[in-house]
Image (cartoon, rainbow, N blue to C red; front, side, top):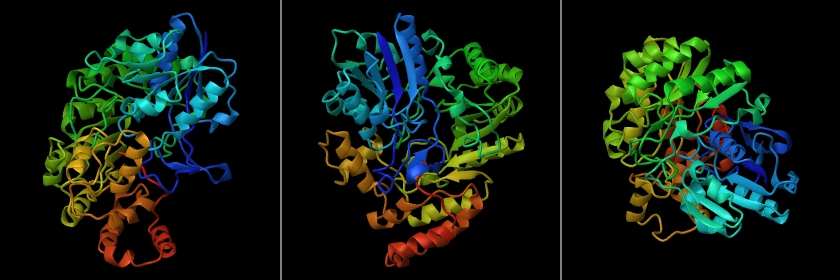
Length: 476
C-alpha cells in the first residue's frame, strides 16, 4: 500500500479571535493573507509511525501540511491508499488546540479522493464518535503500538491502545527523519532568535507520573518510559551529523525526573557540542542535574512555575512550593544556562486577586521569561471535574466541539473568584514580550479591571498595544 502520514494545517482563519490557548509553545507569526500561523515542530510520533509502516513493507510519505500552510483542498491524496492524520501533534498532546476542523477537513477530503482514513490524537481519544462519522479507523491512545492493526484492509472502527502497556520507546524503529524537510524548521523561534539553523526534534522519555490538576494526559500513561541514554545519543547524533541540525528540542514532559538517567544522557550529549532545549519540573532540579545540563549544551530550560503562591500550588497538586521554584531558577542561573523560561498559569483554582498579585511580585525577581496562559479546563482533568461540581460545565457533554466551546466560556473561572468578564479582557492579549519586567504593567493592569470593563474595545486594544503585549495566547 501507498500511505501518507499527515500533520494537518491548524489554520486560524476561523478561530483567531476565539481561541484561548494556542497549541504550539512558540510565538504566532503573521503570514500572507493576514492568516495567523503558529511556528511549529514536526510531530515525533508521525516519524515513528512512518518507520513502523516502512518495516511492514509499505510505501510511506510524511507531509507536514501545517508547516507548509497547506489546506486540505490543495492536497492531492488520490495517489495514496491510506491517509493517517493526527488531531494534535506529539508535544501538544497535553494541551492541544480546542478546534478539530483541521483534522475533519483532511479526513473528509481524503475520503472523497478514495482513501482509507485513520485518525489518532487526544481529541479523537476523548471523542471517538465524532471522528468515526468521517474516518474509517479511530485510534484511542498512543498510536505506534496499534498502527499495524489499523492498516488492516478488513478493519474499520475504534482501536484502543492498552494504556496499561504503554509503548516501549526502545522497541520502536528509528524515527524516519529522512522524510522530514528540515529546512522548514528553524531553531530561532524556539531559542528566542539567539540560535539559528535547522532544528532537530526528539525525546528521551514519554509519560509523566505526576497529577497536576490542569494537565490533559489522555494520550500518555502515568508510567514514565524512556529511550536508553545510548539511543538518545544515537538519535541526537543523527540529527546533527546526518541532517545538519544546529540545535535540538527535547519534547519530554519533564526531562529531569530520573537523576541518573538525566546525567547519563547529558554525558553522552557533551560529545556532540550542540545546544538544546528541555522542559522540567522545578522539584527535579538539583545542583548535579543543573551542572550536567549546562556542561552538555543546554541553552534553554522551561520550568513549570504555575504560581508563586504556596496555597495555589497545593490546591493544583504541584507537590512543590515557592522555595523549590526559587531554588530551581537560582541553580539554573548559577550554572549559566542562558535561557530560563517559566510557565505561570493565570486564574488557577484557588487563585484570588491577592494571590495573583503576590505571584507576579515574587516571580518578577526571578530573572526568567514568562509565558502566561489562562487556565483552560480540558476534559477528564481535575479542573474539568471541579467545573462540573460547580455547575459551570454540563456533566453530559459528548462531542469535542461542545467541550471546546465550554472550555472557552469558563476558562479562568473554575475554583476561584474571577468572573468571565474579567478573564475575557485577558483573552485578547496576554503574552509578555520576553521580559519579566513587564510584570509591573500587569500589576497596574489588574488594578484597572473595573475601569477597563467600561471602556470600548477599541480603546482596550490601544491600551494593550502601549503595553507591548503580543497577539494571541501561548500555551502552558
